[in-house]
Length: 121
Image 1 (cartoon, rainbow, N blue to C red):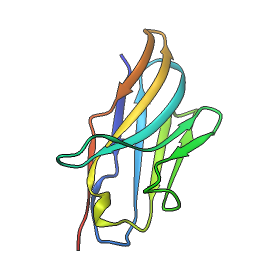
Image 2: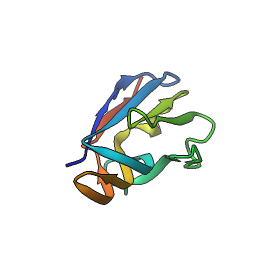
Image 3: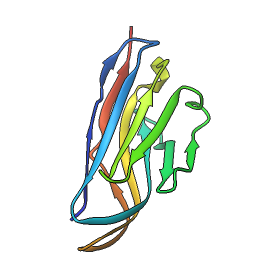
Image 4: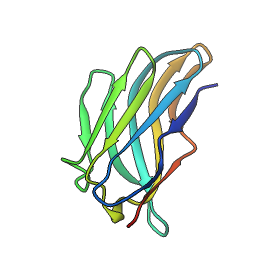
């Protein structure tokens, strides 16, 4: 079974930075796309950023220029560097992997457990 393990969330002041990481565990051959989504109380889950195995990236408009997504294919790990954080960035951040292929089979979509990011003065 493929699992996504997240770390790096926490409390930070406005203008500060955090770096999230998410490692996929299991016997994995490949992961097409990895990314981050976030959900604030009372709101839907929105795209933060995605990155393909070839390095193509996509960002939500609200984080473009402030956040940077990257991945290490050898470690099956995706990162999210968050700079110039704002209170409106406060949310639960979920790691996502799409088109996962491993010895146990293929998975169209896998979600992490979520990690809380709070931006407050």
